[in-house]
Image 1 (cartoon, rainbow, N blue to C red):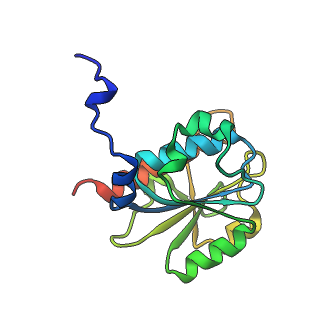
Image 2: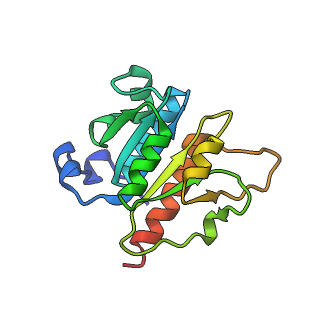
Image 3: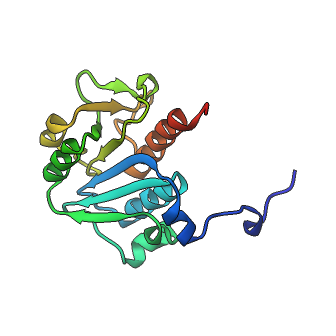
Length: 178
């Protein structure tokens, strides 16, 4: 086995990325403190052709050199928008018939492995603050909640790790077997 060179990976240009059909997922980041987490989510969104990222509340926005450290240019490809109020964003998305799902540990959450995607449905995934998670108000407004099962001693995962896990899971459920 030989490791591939970057030139052999046949990656899209920025222009090709923008023209590509997107995965029907929108990411909503609410009050994310870590610039590296924000950049990492951008990079994941680029990898899976995510439609858009909403940066809400205190979540920093590009251009920012600390976001760029982990995004590595993904802020130039992934469409994003800053909105002050996450509740307004969730309400707007729901009016557009986008199913909104908080990624949080709540009563009656659906475990990720049990969540089934619906054909031709667009989803918005709401990720919350590193310490406090998704606010109760946002959870109550969402159409549902997905929980990532955890078996160890910790109560949560890093937000960028959570985003990567959930985005990959929904992406593969939407795209394979096709």
